[in-house]
Image 1 (cartoon, helix red, strand yellow):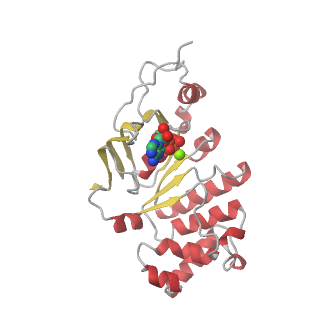
Image 2 (cartoon, rainbow, N blue to C red):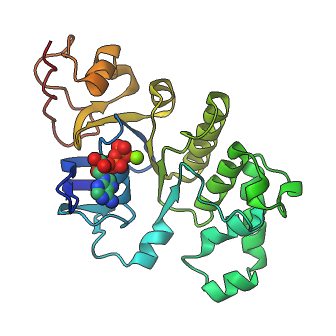
Image 3 (cartoon, rainbow, N blue to C red):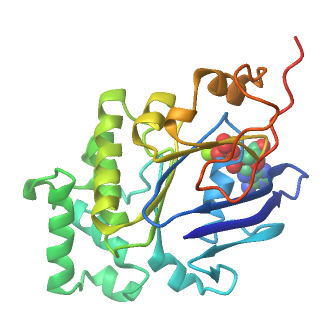
Length: 270
Ligand SMILES: Nc1ncnc2c1ncn2[C@@H]1O[C@H](COP(=O)(O)OP(=O)(O)O)[C@@H](O)[C@H]1O
Ligand SMILES: [Mg+2]
């Protein structure tokens, strides 16, 4: 379980990116983070792999505070899928997937391409699972289409069977039809292994389709937390435009997964 305990981040320029967020995300959950640009989604995700040091509060995974977990251990347990794929373009597809082993393999071995046969077999199997054929293995990653590159990114992320996968806008650079395929691959790979997924998205329809749970952020705060069915059009408007909540009492009911209720955003002035 991932637990955010009163997490806040104020950047040195004074920007409050995350404001006192408390959330618990159960093992194996596909949790979608939605919200306007600048809401704090990426900052929140980056707190889970130690890339962002919180100003206040903490994050724990299965009861272990991240500040106590070594970076190396953390990188084995938490993998990331990026909007712009973050592949090494000049390296082969196989090499990029094997790079998912870097937390456990020395850089020298990786540079020399010395990987164990079982690791190579695993990389091939993962590539097959994301729909890439053996003919892709030795191609340079930079030659592939965006959708294919993200498939490589998914295979790389699952190379060490992480407990948590952070996907920061994984389909924001892709066409809608491909987006659905890519999210299906992430969801299926996670389900097979019981991996928890924290995935930020822009598309409401995809959030509703893929999320077991939707967390809506605005101005660094969690302003919605519930199931896709509870994420009504009025709540979508409230999340993006700060519109008056027209179908709810003054506080948003927290879902069964959440540990606390959250204040509603201020309604926009007419
Ligand atoms: N490294 C940084 N330094 C200063 N401000 C930052 C940094 N990263 C993000 N921010 C600011 O923090 C806020 C939240 O950003 P971010 O988490 O990237 O939001 P989102 O992913 O929802 O678009 C924004 O105002 C952004 O400009
Ligand atoms: Mg972002």
